[in-house]
Length: 142
Image: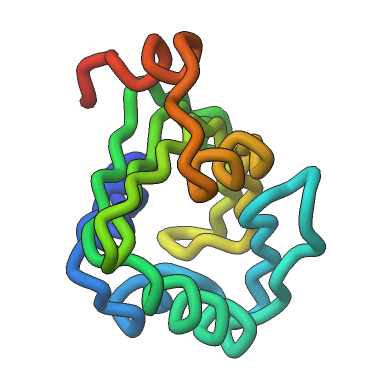
């Protein structure tokens, strides 16, 4: 069995290439994915995850997803990082996040990302990055 952080980093590498099939290969068929845990209902199952990734990926030209810290406990991986997304028109959206992933062997069964969607929406409208977001994104990645 691979280390959970290695699986997560593989998912990130797959997503940066926009290889949806590769991303989904790390998920169990019945995955429950809270891509914005407090703001949106979860995706349930790979078919829903595929729809989301296809739609979300169409609005992204470049992904600069980084992990700063992680910890593993039992079947869980806890992560902290920042996701910088560049739209096809060049708009950069910075999303500091924390996440919890649950595993069954090497497959992700549950995924909860905690991110402030209001901060992301403000950036999409052209508002500058706040001092706290700049501070959160200025950390070395693992």
